[in-house]
Length: 605
Image (cartoon, rainbow, N blue to C red; front, side, top):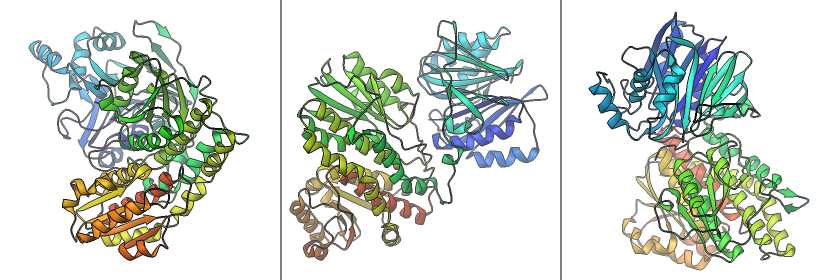
C-alpha cells in the first residue's frame, strides 16, 4: 500500500526522492518522509499530509545529499501523524527504515526490545524494524538486516539507510513489491516503476526472501540463504509521458479518455490473422471441470462479467469469487480446476493468497494482469496481459475495461479449445470486440450530457444502481466508482432484487441509475423502473433503446448508449458511469485522483 523510494548516486537525492514520492502517492498519501545523509549525519524530515506539503518545507532549504530513502504512507498501525510517519529511527538516530506491509509479530518483538532497553516513539509496527536492526548491528548493516529479517513474520518490503555505512541502501522483500533499478547517474530502489521513469534504464523485481544492496556503482542481490545471485535486470520500456496529465485536469479523466487505446491495444495484441491467440499461454488448459475467477474490488466486477459470459461459452460451472473470501472457503479445488486471478498490479495480496490456495489444491492458475514482473506472474502457471499502460488514478478505469475485453477474448479462446465454439460463430464475436474501441469512443462523446446530470445530482446523499444479467456487475462498478471518489453512499443491485429490501430506501430524493438493454430482460427492467416511479424515485436510464416511447415516458432522464454486441455491452455501459462519478466528484470538490483512505495497490491483508 505504501510507497518506497531510495537513491544513491551522483545526483542530488533530495530532488529525486520527492519526485519519486509524488509519483508513488497513488499507493498512499496519509503522511510522507525522507531520510538523508547530509554532511555525514542522518537527517530526517517527515510530516502528516501529502508529499507536496513536505516538499514545500524541505526543497526551499537547498539541502544536498547523494543518498537517501523516502516513504509515502497508507496507515495501518497508528493514525497518520508525524510520529507515525516513516522513516523510523533506532535509539541512536543512526539507522533509518521505511517499510510497506505488516509485521505480524511486531508486538512480541516490541516487548522484547523494550525489555532490552529500547525506547519507542510511535505506534507503528515499522519502528520495530529499526530497533531490531540496531540490536543485530555489529558494524555490517547488510548482515544486521539479514539477521533481523529472519525474525519477521508477515508481508513486507523495506529499505534501510545507516549513518555509519552511508554508501549503500539495504532492501528486503517478503510478499510486498519492491524493485531495484540502474541508472546512468546512480541506482534506485522503489515500490513501482513509475517512480523512477526517466532515471532508471533497467530494473529487477526482487523475489520473496531476497535482500539487495544498492550502491552508486552497482547492485547485489542475495537469496534467502545468503547466497549472492545475479540481478534479473530488464529494460524499462514505459514512456515518462505516460505518467503526466497531458492537459487533462485529473489523471482519472485522462485515463477514462485513454480507454479506446487501452482496449484497442489489448484486443489487437491477441488477434493473429483474425483469430484469437494467447502466445504467452502456450499450454492452454482445456480439460477443466470448473472455473473460479478470483479478484478484489473493480477486478472482481470484471470477473463477475466474465462469469456471465463464460458459463454460456464453456459449459462448466463458473464462479467469480472475492479473493479474500476464496482462500477461507471450502470450495472444491483440484487438478481439473481452472483459477483465473484478475489483478491490475499483480501484487494484490488477497488475490496472491488466493492463487497460493488454488495451487495448494492442485488447480491450474492463469493470471490476468496489467503489470509485468509481479508476484502473481511468478506464481501462476501462465499469464495474459492487458495493455492499458500505467494507471495513476486510484480509482480504476481503463484497466477495468481492458480486463473486460481480455476476459472476453480468453473466454472465446477457451471455448474454441474445448470444441464448444466453431469458427463461424466465433468470428462475429471477434468482430464485435474489434469494434469495441470505437463504441467506447462513442460513449465518451456523451460527456457533456453526463456533466449536466452531475450538476443536477451532485448534492444527493444516496444513489442506487440497478442492472440485470451482465449489466448487474456494471451496476456494482458504477456504485463503487461513485462512492470511491465522491464519498456519496451508493449501492448496486440486480434489478430484480430491488423489491427484496432496497426499495424501502426509494423516495423523491433518491436517484436510481438503471442500466437497460434491449438484448437482455428488457421488459423486466421496464417493470422495475415502474416500481421505482411508483415510489417517486428519480430514474436515470442508460439504454441502447433511447427511442422507445415506453421507456422515455417513465424515465426522468434517458442517456442513449451506442448499440453494441453482447460482449461489448458491459464496457460500453461502464464509460458513462465513470464520467458520472468523475463529474459529481469534481463538483463536490473531492480529491479525484487520490480519494481519502484508498490506495492503488493493496498489499496488506
